[in-house]
Image (cartoon, rainbow, N blue to C red; front, side, top):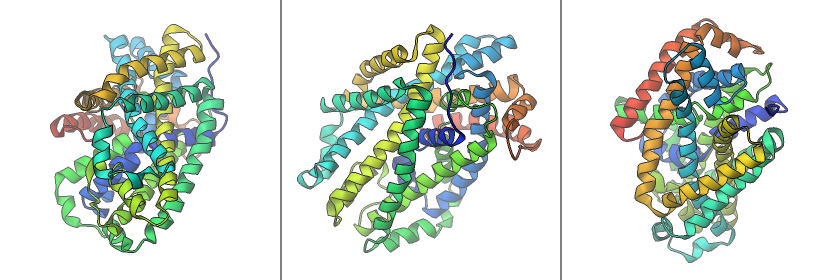
Amino acid sequence: MHEREGFNSKLGFILSCVGSAVGLGNVWMFSWRLGRYGGAAFLIPYFLFVFVLGTTGLMGEFGLGRAKGKGSMAGIKEILKDKKIAGASILSIIPTLGVAGIFLFYNVVVGWVLKYFSMSVANNFRNISVETYLDSFLGSGQTIFWMALAIGITTIILTFGVSKGIEKANNIMMPTLFLVFIILLIRALTLPGASEGIKYLLIPQWSYLLDPITWVMALGQAFFTVSLNGAGMVVYGSYADKNLDIPSSAVNTVFYDALAAILAAFIIIPAAFAFGLDPAAGPTLLFITVPTIFKSMAGGHLFGTIFFASIVFAAISSTINMMEATSEAFMSKTNWNRGKSVIFIGIISFFIAIPLSLNMNLFGVFSDIVTIYIAPLGTLIAAITFFWVYGVEKARKEINHGAKKPVGKWFESLAKYVFVLVSFIVIVLGIAYGGIG
């Protein structure tokens, strides 16, 4: 067996977890959902869910990883086998399959982001019809190169290991991301007409709180934005120091993840209002609305380049976690070394993702299967394994080890009953609404 790697510092661990949590969902999904479901009204259920359920889920996944000193697949399997639970091998692989599936289709989208970053650097938005370019690009042969580049960047980072690869990359990318967001925020808020967007974000449209869909989408956003999938945060927890303050780390991860989403919204929504664009444009917000904004803005070339660079950072920091969860499981099964395992996973992922790049219908079906069924099921399996099978009292003891402010007895009911029940409800709602994450 190879000696297990680890993070060098609590800060490095937190920044890596924030990097995993802060992804395209914070910028792409959060902004248009905020625009579509009532502006500030959407924030009320979102904050409730993310700070109560998000922190609970993160503490559980960090604790599971640290308790067993293993990633999701090996750790869950060990706990289930100790209790002689039937089907341990099958159940334990589901969270890893979920995150591996996300990694495949997510890299296709990261490829789009890289392409748009290259176009912003070359100032090409001025030379194209932003509204029609996306349709001509999606599904074309060009997307394969950009998807390969996305996987290649992540693969190279992971070959350096946990402290020299994952931690070092996030120590650079996350502070830079927030600095860039602040620069863009100042620019967006000073645009003529941006004040209407600010009002939209700050003045709640209370009627939206009477619509169940607002709460459903806020729940989905809260659950998926902090990378709860039963694998990614478990593997980071397995690399954590035994004296790491898990409750503090979970709260910090949720706080900075939510902050990134809010900053992105306060960049995009006021700018959309300033240029008379639809803040509720849906998934096209990032690839049509945003380029249109920078195309029209004074200094748009510079700010567009900075913006898409920040999105690259957000996206890559998430794929690092997804690929690490997959690679660690592969390493634990084969006992291959890190370099060999990561490169193998990278190559296999590239070939499997090619059809997803070329066929948008297949992309949609595949991403729906993974995000509606497999990944939420992975969250539920990890939660039941840790809070029920392993034992909620032992789980709380593990979570409190090294904590300056230990969680009380109340946490046991919250984790064992509320969080697990809501995890199941997320699956049901995802199926009913055709996806909420």
